[in-house]
Length: 500
Image (tube, rainbow, N blue to C red; front, side, top):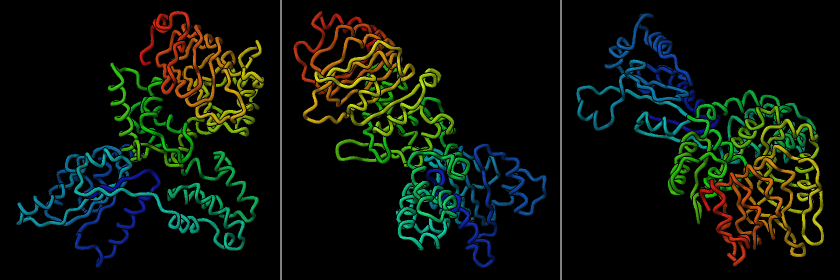
């Protein structure tokens, strides 16, 4: 028994079809009397599959699994099962005699029959439970293999006729990150593009995830990949997966940082201590890795995870309610991102569901975007007494700020514009303090000011009654870091604090 596994669209079905087609001829069947190919699918109908097997074997239409078993137990056969999502008990569900391991064959020297089963699945866990003698993982293509496949589905004559188009075509191909299904879908979508302008528009659409302008990408690609997401065993696991898309493409996510983020978002909450929380986090990562939705790698200092680029695009598509609401998450925080984000009318913000903003730099544009005010010469962010600009913004990452040496550290003071924040990560920011306006964040559960320039905290911190996680790693613990009024007393007033 051989298990072939890998992410959706990577070519498992194609490989199985190639095996089947190579054995169709009478002289090339490698000694198998019967070669049976079946698609199991997510919701298998075993009675229908039994009927199909009976038909292939020439048995009466009313034959059951016991009849199939009796017929095949003394026959040489190859069974190809595509698209398995759950464990299939071959004798019980289909009447298929199990292939014997080599040690078992030696114990049954009088019965030397060629019984082979090859199956495909997206889930490494399912593959393991099927107890195959051999497991084969199908990986994505390297760049040259991907280019070769891409050219088979686009118009090679047009590509070869123009140096600019050829360069753009390779950039479009690279956006598929070696996933065969993506290469086919995007290749077909470009097959009638004759000008550099069309190719540039396609490339921009892929970068911006404007998928509705690309023929077939939703129906043929994302819906196919989304089945893996839908098959996850819990809503918590699905939310953990979507959280991973908050990091940029090709970004390595340290496992400890990811688990800490899940804890801060409330996705890991029922634990007695941080050790238990991290154990659960590692278990969640293992499940996502087994479902081929998250890649697990070993790093020099720490193990990390990352999303395949196309899987990340699919995740962002899911977050946007399958393309219906494109502004739920803004990731990157460049000036262009912010300008596009700021175009939303105030009324739209009032109606929008929870929004996330993740920035990896900080400058005047970010300050103005959040507070509608520039940083003054003292490094203060003053906020006008107006209604909140972003009333539904729940998660805000503004870590790893980049400020010039000449610019003073700022005091963050945009809180009145973001009253619904539950998650605030300012780690690595070159900020000097938090204003007393932090008291408006009555829903805040997670606050991270690690590796900042903050030397003291406002006494208004005690107003954050929902705060559960307060992180300030890497800060020089000055005498007056905590409020001058009894610091421990202030912290003790945070009755829900679990981690400090």
